[in-house]
Length: 160
Image (tube, rainbow, N blue to C red; front, side):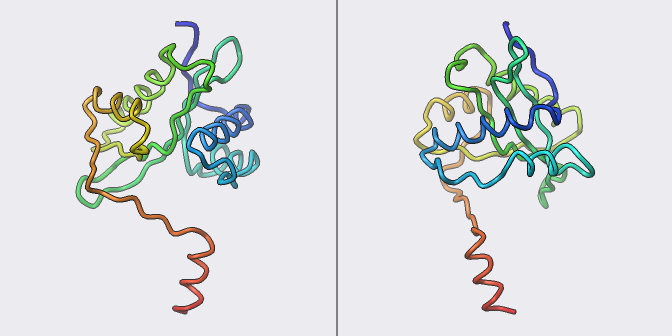
């Protein structure tokens, strides 16, 4: 293994941001990323962090990341949401993605979480098959719902 997995640190914020942008391009939404490096620093590495990260590092360069946060399931209790798991394209296939995934699952296990949840695009069959091979259930009948910022504003203005 030519890389290490470690908790993300403030010094990694720019590299994490670059991976987020690369993921948006991969998912065919290159203009969707609004979060900035400063947002990541403020929200993840200072007072009351809203998320945690693990990074894969090779020769001092961050080549992958997993970004996750704690949530609460009304049915199960403590849970983790894996927001993004990304390895830069030139480093895929060396095991960094599986190592990052394993680190998040170990974190959840060590912290007595009852569930780890995430979304995966249906056309990303490599990821779907990988997740299934690890014992994850991929639900076809559940739908992800999002309320974007403009629609949120519209709804609140119409109802308050």
